[in-house]
Structure formats: C-alpha cells, structure tokens
Length: 81
Image 1 (tube, rainbow, N blue to C red):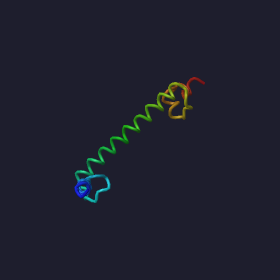
Image 2 (image 1 turned 45 degrees about the vertical axis):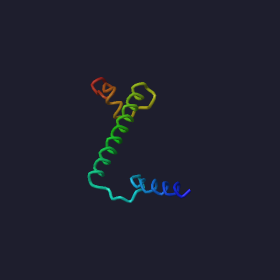
Image 3 (image 1 turned 90 degrees about the horizontal axis):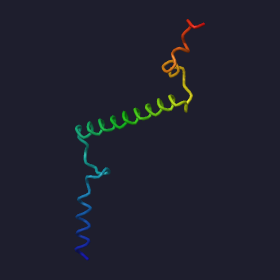
C-alpha cells in the first residue's frame, strides 16, 4: 500500500502544467493565446455575418435600410418618380 500512495503523490506532482497551475505566464504565451482568441473571434464573426447575409438573401430575415440599399438600390432612385 505504501507504493500506491507514493505513486499517487508523484502523479500529483506532475500535474502542475494544467490551467489552474500557479506558474507565471510569459509574454510569448500570452501573445500566442491572444492571437488564437482573436482568430476564433474573427472566424465566429465572419460565420455569423455570412449566415445573416444568406438569411437576408433568402428572405428569412427582415432587411434593415442598409441591407435594402445594398441588395435593391433601385428602391432609392428618385429619378423613377
């Protein structure tokens, strides 16, 4: 039984690299994390924008003025009246 307890203590000592570790974060690690986080945010924003564009084009979502001007500019042409 003493061997199992010693092995368990060694395993606990090797798990210091997790997210709750108290090791300080280096600037390089932070910059890597920041670029990954920014890339994820940009990807998510692009996906939401693409989906909204597809929904507007399909007529599933009501257009606002900007989208109407972008898709049907003839509506705003005063020369027709």
